[in-house]
Image 1 (cartoon, rainbow, N blue to C red):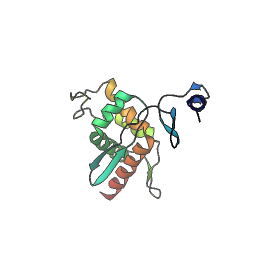
Image 2 (image 1 turned 135 degrees about the vertical axis):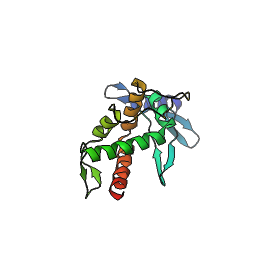
Image 3 (image 1 turned 90 degrees about the vertical axis):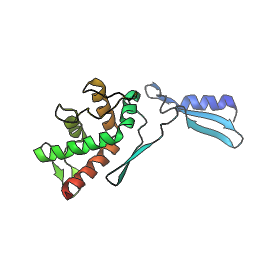
Image 4 (image 1 turned 30 degrees about the vertical axis):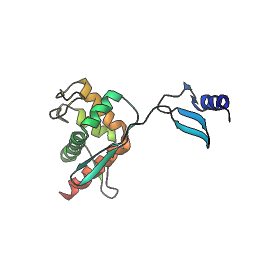
Length: 169
């Protein structure tokens, strides 16, 4: 396949229903000796993992607000602790319900996000920005909480572990 044909195919693949796809979803095709080399146009972020309470939490988020994602990655342990505390607080005061047979929270993940973002929820003390300065309870911190919950599968896994630990305490 010639370079010209590869470029034409690449343009057709990267066209979505509303026009050109975002960079995070676009593919790059390059002819090589073994055939066509396919890669993403935008380099992916490396996964970040932490150990907390004998459990490993690994986050693979590739989308959303990049400055907020940098704050989440820098403070992942604190965010996981904050979400765990919010789940326990929500279960204690009745704002969250649970399905014991399925070991899940009955409410949506956005209810947990709301508990974290409320004034009495997750506190900004101990969190640092990407420059290492302490964060305040401001818009940037709220956006970082929202970014944490955009990776819904990761947030649900943190909530499931928090629910299991709540029941075993």
